[in-house]
Amino acid sequence: MNNIGGGGVPGLEEVWDKLLSGGSMVYGMATDDAHVFKEPGNPMMSGLGRGWVMVRAPRLDAGALMQSLERGDFYASTGVVLDDVIATERNLSVKIKTEGVSKYRVQFIGRGGQMLTEVAEPSATYAFRGDEGYAWDGRRRFSSRGWSVIVHGNSGGGSGGRETQSCV
Image (cartoon, rainbow, N blue to C red; front, side, top):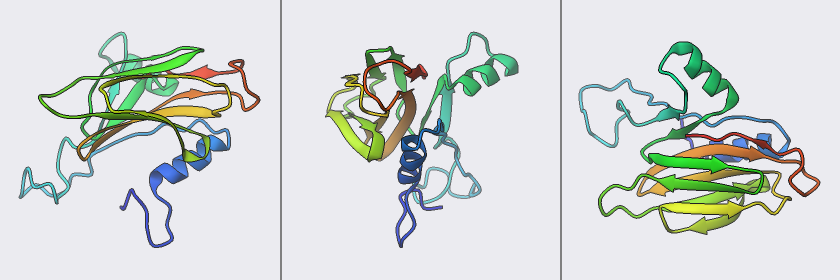
């Protein structure tokens, strides 16, 4: 699987954007497609622990986890871990759990794959304008990434009709 696309095939983020821009609520997931176990730690091979979801649930049991997943109260990552995400009617805030001397970049993306804003810090807040259609945050640390679909708003401006998922 080539997640970034190429050769006339769109990347997964482009497909995700088309669905979200069309009004569908589609969550981003990450999993490790591990089936090579003879070279642990080789970054060129599929391996364990390279893609996961972090779920905010009141209890560690199957029912609570499934309810949180169904309501979108989670985020996906291939390396970046969050301390918190807060989504309100007015803004979306993301706080990355930092590691050592790593540098971080948070991008807030809206309808049409438009970058709404970018912050080269581990914490960032995006204030909604009302015409985004939706907003999600993309986080990067070196080659690691993370994604959250947080807010899916109305297309007519303002904050009315905004559907929020607070994912962490």
